[in-house]
Image (cartoon, helix red, strand yellow):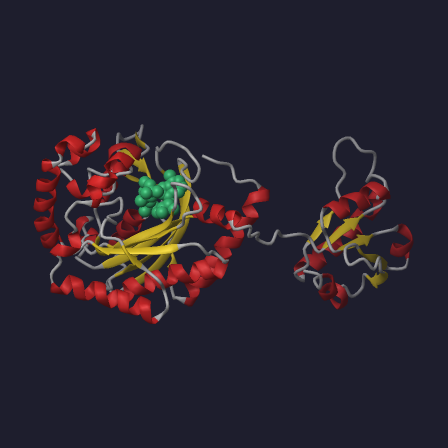
Length: 421
Ligand code: ATP
Ligand code: MG
């Protein structure tokens, strides 16, 4: 679990701003659900035989009433619970997005943390392939918006439960024939959740997985038509995809379209975003049967990839740094800064640190002004104040220009202070 300090958090805020703007363009609205949910929600929603439920959840008992609770390992289950609890689908489908921390007890390594952050989008109540495509286009637009390249899209279809049943029998038979190659986890899951075995991270089992019967070969006409419709929209919009028949995703709730955005530049933690359709989850959680589709991206991995590409985000800096030679000028200086801030200027006041005598020397105040990266210094000197003015000194454009400005009509020069952003 990481502290995110100011040097880093400006990147986070920059990404979050981009996401908010983009979500508005696609008409997705923000939803915020609790970090803690009843454990049963995840067991029922994600599936008992999944990595998350078997070994990654932070679960505990509420000391006051004995209720079993879990720190959310993902947010789809919580969003679905909320839509059911508040009957949000009574008047049609909803497009939602969220951002926030998730918790999984994994082995920490690059791109894999125990508290990590996801940004996710969910469209609930819409059955059509065009929504699956919209979801993928939305994620793809985000990569373009923030400048990410080197991301490829893999897609698959998991079909419908009936089709999975037929595939499951063939898959079990295949795995039984190759029982000697199964690791302990796979042997345990062979009859409870064989599809999960295809999601193994064990390199020794990759060849086995490669040769396994493909779900796509068991899909009926309707499922294939849905899959083809998604691909046609992606093609029409110039979004490149690769069909990966082994892509199954980590939770049991998916059906039909599943997808991942993957990069080769982050080592083995290369999946930056994953999602798919989950038409049976809402009913599973106690709601009226309704289709849905969604994705979640890993914020740490996306930011890491941006860094890997050498991309930096703008760091917010003050427009002005207020230099205050004598403490007696503080009331008028602060009043002026308040007026400027109300007009949108970013203003930092000089404040002595440590046991300094008074406000500190002009030299040390100018040094601080430089370090703040502000474009201008405002010098509240005694002579200027007597004239009802303040000295505005350019710090960064190389001109060293100084002008006196009147304290009577701050609004007339506030705009100029923002000109160097
Ligand atoms: P992985 O296969 O890497 O374990 P996952 O299938 O468990 O990923 P999802 O549950 O689909 O991942 O979560 C969506 C995204 O959240 C992932 O693609 C990844 O970018 C990010 N993510 C998942 N687990 C972690 C983690 N422990 N630390 C950081 N990011 C994570
Ligand atoms: Mg995982």
